[in-house]
Image (cartoon, rainbow, N blue to C red):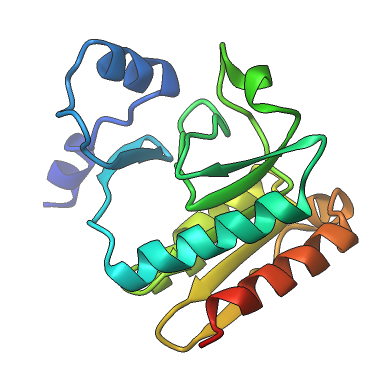
Length: 178
């Protein structure tokens, strides 16, 4: 029986294959999905609380990061050969035009807003972001009304920008007011 299990493995997709599928129209228009560690995952629809928190965070981050950074909401990051996640919020270096021909390969800050995906975000996404050197990653737990800084690898932490982390913390407080 064990031998049978080793013979059957899922196909892991590369970013290049995934991008070709998108270009070829394999996925339905508006279908929400992302590539994580070779697996194509379908994302669940957003509730009202999730959507409101995203918009409040986006507005606050755009005010905080006015130059030299782009605030991206649910847009792809080309993190490695097998991962193209679409985090809820990512602050990337540069401007929107810098990414006309290719998605950014890193971010200063990433936040995932969670109400139904909390464990997945804390484990799987946190691991991916740490492994790929993202210095600051937060999970915003809407049900508990709190934001939690996920521990990143030492290399990622050394690349971190403490002042940006403080800005991010203030931004998350916006989500939990009133």
